[in-house]
Structures are given as C-alpha cells and as structure tokens.
Length: 112
Image (cartoon, rainbow, N blue to C red; front, side, top):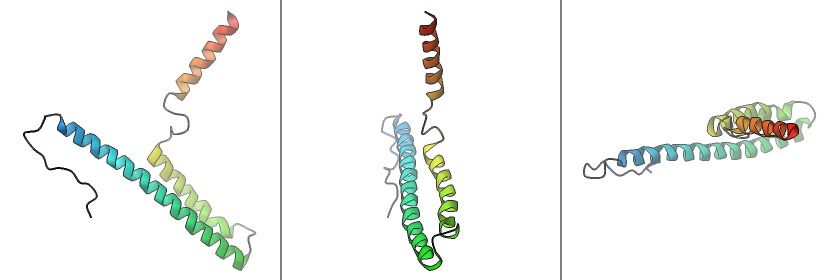
C-alpha cells in the first residue's frame, strides 16, 4: 500500500505546480505526525491501564511499581507531543506580545 499518491511530474503543467506539490507533501507529513501521536497516545493508555491493573492486582497498588512504566513512558509521550505540536501549542506564537500590549493598554487607561 502506498503512503503517498502523487501524480508524476508533467512539464506542460503550470510552473507553480511544484509549490503546490511541496505544500501538499509538508501538509501530509504534518498530518501523518499528528496521526502518529494519537496512535502513540492510544497505545500508551491501553498498555498502561493493562500493566497497572496487572501489577496492582498481583503486587498491590501501593508504591511506585505499578505506575513506573506509565510515568517514564509519559515523559516520552510529552516530548512526542512537543515534537508534533510545538512548544507554542498552549500559548500560541504571539501570546507574549498580546499580553504585553494588554498590560500596556491597562497602564494607559490607569494614567488617563
């Protein structure tokens, strides 16, 4: 099964088609990364629930043992999340500038 289905290069097409093709490849790569993260998350949840229940029933739920795999794998999952969505996921790219403008506007209103 092919992962990408891209038409072969045609010299008679518009000269800007390579930009569309590159944009498509970048978008497809991003979507594949997002899908990969969600699969990683799903496997993380299923496997760790199984391990926590299995270890917890046999050895008890107290202590770090039943949760160790979930914790360390969770650290890796966080790094996978940051690699896919980027560190600006929560605040956005312009969050800092927007906050500065907001506080400056409050200061202006206070002094007027």
